[in-house]
Length: 141
Image (tube, helix red, strand yellow):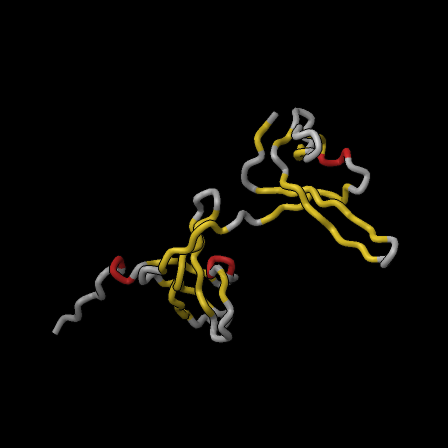
């Protein structure tokens, strides 16, 4: 048995309400993988690990993002990106989201007030702190 680590997966289950003719889904976290690479989930009735696909309403496995367990201030860090026309721009990192596995993810706010990880931008160049920038070259007289 192999413990489930990153990336995190959930088993998805389909539930159909015949009275209202509606369908919804529920999920169970994948706890481990057996030697045959089958996902294992907890059966709430027995408290034992069972194959995720042992339930008749099994609808598949899905990768999920790990939960954010804390947010820290941005601390003056900046994200630098380049537009398709070559223009370089910076955004302030307003926070660092700490995920359950300890990964820190930078958070920036765009002009529309939407938050996101600047590293996912196709033009992402770097994260840096202004205090770590090399000094500007001196000009000779």
